[in-house]
Length: 452
Image 1 (cartoon, rainbow, N blue to C red):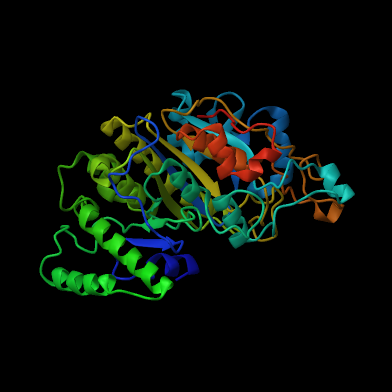
Image 2 (cartoon, rainbow, N blue to C red):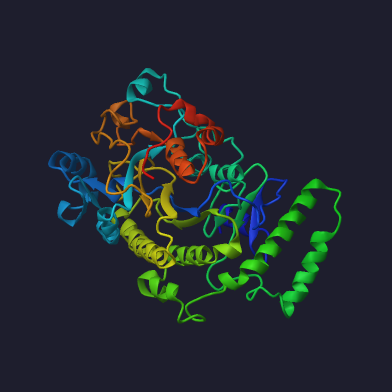
């Protein structure tokens, strides 16, 4: 059990959990929104540091040869890549996503990462570069991806700040969300997997009623200590949400065989019997019941771990992608059933990219910049965004200054702040609100990459 899991479940009972700030007056379902029309973001967190260099590969002769020359035994054979347009190819295990490129619903964003300001190799050589905190550290780089900016000392996440700016619900986490959903006065609401709920039918009957009565007594007892009072408020909110969302969360293919969502997700069997598919299944159910959830703006977080591929990378990444791709296709199919394809945008994040140069164990080591995917009906797909890096060791985008440091750790050409700002703008924030939410965005010439 890791630190994130402990934090997510520390409120106990398998109930909905809220984590974070001390004031914790979470939004109620009836809270007004700042713009019309429903929109939701789905963050797909690929924890461990996904190897974006093998996720999407250049297909032109010069580009592929540069890639293969450094990748060596870890290079995906050109004939195995799945073309998305004429310039790039997807990892073969992601082939199911290729039609979304043709439908202009899928776009890669190249070489994204935390940046304090635009950074060049010349600045690194001259030792004048201003760098983000603690590059190559899993926990610190996750924090930067989840909070924006370049300092790990920030206490809030960009998702929490986004939802506070919108006056909307908290961020809903089906997987590990880390810092992303924490705001100044609200917290992530962690939700259980299919079939799990504190009160499965929402009624708190039988033993559930006794437990609820006891917890209500504890939560409603006057407290003089602010910390204890805040914790009690978390419990009250979690219990209320558990009662309202329990009937939605308890749905499974076994107890609702005719539910059309089950067909989209293959009844959670075979290639759909994975954690990431089950999390997206839960999101689809909540999107369908968005009237019960309340509000017109939501952020959901799902996660898939295992991407820290220091060894056996080809096999391990292939296994993960073979779970991820059908889960995403199932989710998009469900969105089409719900008439929400244009209202929901999914996007990836990960700790960091990985070294283009393999290590001696059939894997790769921690990098910096990384490629990411954005998927949805509102995405301006069939195009690529950001700048594809120079793949040469010691080239213009290699972090290594001295020859023994040349590993193909890419200096990002696009910042996390720019990536997030584009998503926040689509959610309805004004330019002024986006700038307030992401203060470090002012360091960059463009605050909107235009992919959605």
